[in-house]
Length: 321
Image (cartoon, rainbow, N blue to C red; front, side):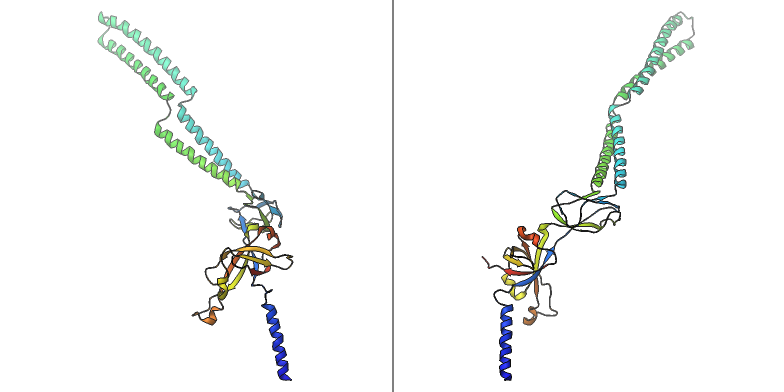
């Protein structure tokens, strides 16, 4: 009787094992993995507004979060004023003196020319007097010297007027041009910072989580919102070392999950080059059975909305073509 019971137990166990590892059993068990995109701000600013809700779908370029703008707008205004000032200085150097300054020099030149003409007439009269010895040699020398000084002043103002009409020297222009370019770069940077004050979606995605709310002040570089693009949803499963030869990159696979009416197809895009778990000390026949290799597959885009990160799935391998 005891022998009969043992035989019946063995038959029942063999039936259970046949059901677990029969043709309908999945090849591997795995889970859905999401590769999230974490968006942050480069400065420590207050969150001014959240424009989306968790779970909503967003398009590329859509505005998601608006940060406090006082600091970046102030920096942009300062940079713009500095650029305008440097540009005005460059244009002034290129055009020479202003018309008002040129008019003053012209007036001085006219007065000097009139004084030189008067001195010349006086020198001509004194020359006749000196020839008849009416005046002394010292007086004649004083008259000649006065005319020479006034003539020199006319030449000086004439040269000064020409110089004022000319642009600045080439080295001065070059230095000022460099200052203008530097100010322009600072203005461009300030404008770029101002644009970064609004966080936008880099691609079509699902708003997976909102980490900071309106009024909070996250640290610089801390994630504020996380996105999950459809193409970043993958299925991961682990393959024992002895079955590693059955899988290859590009191989077709199918997934089934709880609530999925039909199997979802996909293809393997990654096989880990190293084992996730390595036995200690040495490899042996028994220890090699503990080696597991991570395999990642990409589901078809048409059914990807059925998969959620963390969801368990059963994986079946398709036959090699």
